[in-house]
Length: 109
Image (cartoon, rainbow, N blue to C red):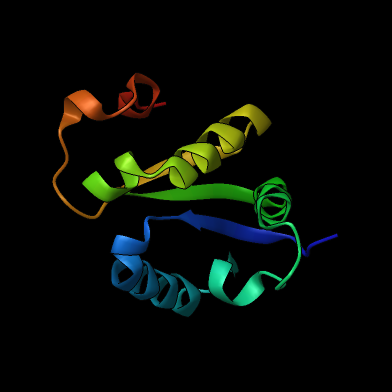
């Protein structure tokens, strides 16, 4: 079973640099994060590893950009997080077409 972390960051590969900077800032503030590049085991079922990571965090930060909105993997991650009741917080990395953003993501709870 994966260890409990504070945050899972979901992002498109097009936003890798933004994600890396966000990881560094959050870690400097004392948060524990699940990182796909360092926490995934090679050869194992990648989607199951992501599901387990999402199940073991309190919050998902969704790095929102046009590339993220077009990514099937990012969509799978945020749908799974919502299904599991994980809090999803969008972080705007680039301007997006707000008509393309899912309605639930536009609500402020």
